[in-house]
Image (cartoon, rainbow, N blue to C red):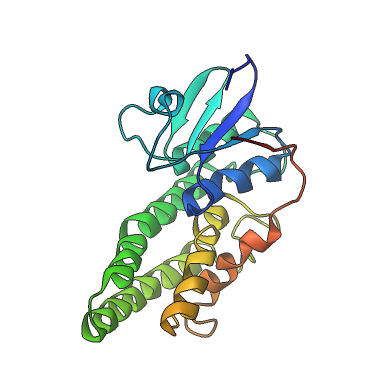
Length: 213
């Protein structure tokens, strides 16, 4: 694939919620981009040249410069295309709280989810599900304290940074529920996470994306 100056290119893989994060942000902003599906078992030299350190998707390439890590990419998109809808609050303190809870989710919630997937027996899985319930309880309480009455995405009425970060994982929870008959997210116990988990359904159909092989 030949890169052109000024292009926005996203290297990703269809099954990655982290790539979904970036796609959500690009489409919400109406940013035309080219999507390149990367074979993680046979990574291209072009992809590796853009992310030689972690060698992971997603990678965004803008004006020939590469940006890795999904949350960092979201912030880059907001700074480069500072148009509506805004992904982050203008207030520095509110913005810091959004970053805090997005990082909490990635550092506390996601690892337990992976333990559930890898669990070798019922007892190990049930223990991990209980651990997940506890960290989600902390998340729910923290969100309610820091963003009282802000619905549905804690960014006004439009999907923002935090909603994208959590909502991109929604398909994974649904898959586990169907495959293992295990309810990880309850609309009653975790209403905020559940609501954000459905945000990928809000993915705009436009945005000018194309797919490259």
